[in-house]
Amino acid sequence: MRIEIPQKTLSDRQKARVVSRGEQISRNNLYFEMDARYAATLSKLSNMYGEHFKVNEEPLYIYFDNYTRQESVNGYDENGKWKELIPNRNLADLLAEKYANGDIQLGENVDSIMQELDDIYQHIDEIHANTKRIEAEKQRKEEEERPEKEAREKAELEVRRKTEAEEKAKAEAEKAKQATEAKIKQKEMLAWAQEYGSDRLKKGLEHGHACKKLYETELGENLIADSEYEYDRENKVDEKGRSCPSLVALEEVERIEKIEGLSASVVWLPEGLTELHKDPEEYNEPKSGCEAVKIDVKGTAGYWYKTF
Image (cartoon, rainbow, N blue to C red; front, side):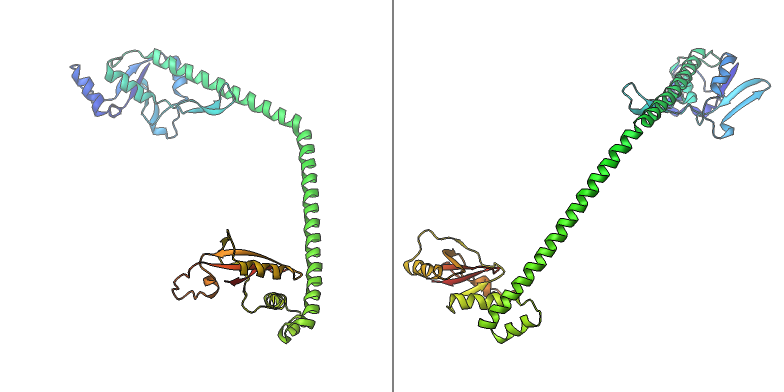
C-alpha cells in the first residue's frame, strides 16, 4: 500500500543532502510502501483539519503532511508522578529525515517505521488504561478515607472555633480591663488636678477630655519643683551612659529619689537638648555634649532632663 507526504516537507538542508548523493529532488509527493494493516495505525494520527489526511481509492494510497501527527501523552510514571510519558511524533517529518539521510529510498517499504508507530499507540493504550486504573484507585481510596477526613476536619474546625472564641473573649476582657483602668486613671488625674492642677487641666478633665500631655507636664513640674527641667515626652533626646558623674549631679539624683513617684540617674547627652528645640525647617549646629540628670516620673510617657 502506498503512502505519500508532500515534497515541501523536505527542508533546504535535507534537499541538499539528497542532491549530494547524486539524486534529483522529486517535484511530486514523496512516496513509500507499507503493509495495508498499518492503515488503521495511520488513522490514529491527529488530523484535526481533514485536508491534511486523505485516503484516495483509485489508485489506493494514503496522503498526510506534517500537520498530521501522533500527539504527546501524559500519564503517571512508576513513582506516581504525572508527567509527559510520550512526546509528540511527526511521521511525515520522520520519513523526510530518513529519506534525506539515505536510510530509506523513494518507493521503499517502511513497515519497520510503521511498526514503531504501532508499538507507540499500543503503549498509549496501556498508559490510558493505567491512568484510568490509578484514578479509580485514588477515588476508591478517597471514598474510604472520606469519613475519617471529614471527622478530622470537623474536629479541627471545632478546635479553631473554640480558639477563636477564647481569643475573642480574651480580647474583649482585655478591652474591658483597659476601659476600666482608663476610667480609674481619669478619676485619679481629675482628683490630682482638682488639688494641684491648672484651671485648664481641671476643666478639660471635668469635660471628659484626655489631656494626657498637659497632665503629665503639670505632674512632673509639681513633683520635681525645678523649672530648669525639660520634658521629653516623645523620647527625642539621644543619650549615653555617664562613666563618672559630677558631684552636683549626684546630689541632684539624691534629692530627686527622696520624692515619691520619681526615679533619677545621671546620663550623658551627646548633643544636649538640641532635639527638643530643633526647627525642622532650619539647620541647627549640634551642641557639644553635656551631663544631665534624667528623671522618670511614674505614670508618664517620657523623661525629664536637666543639664549641667
